Image 1 (cartoon, helix red, strand yellow):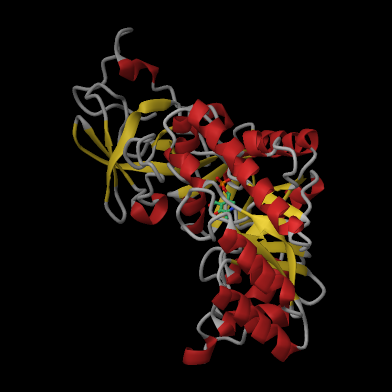
Image 2 (cartoon, helix red, strand yellow):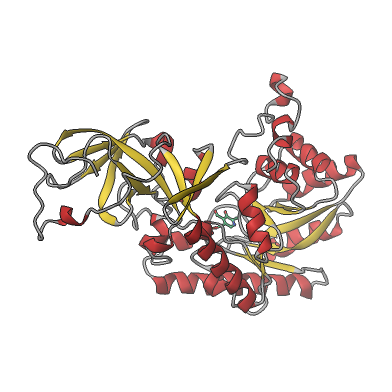
Length: 413
Ligand SMILES: Cc1ncc(COP(=O)(O)O)c(C=O)c1O
């Protein structure tokens, strides 16, 4: 820490500011801020803990790679036993395919014909499973597969309460399962769901109950599909808060947590992980302290995002200083993060602090790279290879931009 602003540098034992002690001034002094910092030891602990959970529950682990968008990190998850990966967008799928990954699930409906054709053309020998949750979606994949002279494994999405995409369990699910099973171009791999409403839960007990219901509802749905004579191998659930509960429901075969790799302030607020298990922070510099109770950092909405979580009730503001839950970023402009501080807090222009973001996955997408640290020392960096727009090829048809996948092909490690 540098010198405190004039009149604010007296510490007493009773002063909350006396505990600031965040040793960030010496961290990565040559690196330009704001920058993402990943603590590798914490990351490794998180990856191993989830791999152990999957092993104990005897389910496959298919982590969501939209959290880190990083091939090197995905590889580590596979080394630790993951069967493959989950991605959110066609672009993420293309980038991970180009980087050599061979088993992917796209867990968002892809319905534009151009995107579907590109994916079919690019999957090569990879096992690419796609999500379907509407008759129209099924028809579009089937038509494209017919044009390409191929068949596509699809997973049927069920809505177990989040209220986003997915057919409700029951007759609707069975009817769409029949459509898929009857289509010679589609292969029903199974059913999946994401209990994202757990992020709005008000207690760990409620999270546990949502997790159990997530697993039980999906297992029941798979049972009804099988009872109708339709194969339904995979029963895939998962969010970081719910997997400890849904993974153990008999009949669940796969979990797809993503955020667990890093954790964030929302997970801490939910009671899912302590702050010591948060691997990702934004290193920021104090660029102004115009008045004693306002510290201005160089991380605004372009570096931190405005995400406050689904429920919005478990975090305050837009991020907080690591180790100091009371030091919260109250306002964001594009380039400015406004920290409210006690006037006696010894933070001065030029000091650096680490900010624990509310939602790690969104924040990663805002950055091109993650700087790795091990025991507080720099340990290299990873590129956020699959951040939105990284392939540079999504508007090819209308703009005549770079040839398809030109950047994606370069995205490998
Ligand atoms: C469909 C789907 N599956 C899995 C996940 C992973 O959830 P989490 O990041 O809570 O682990 C998400 C996250 O948004 C998701 O949308």
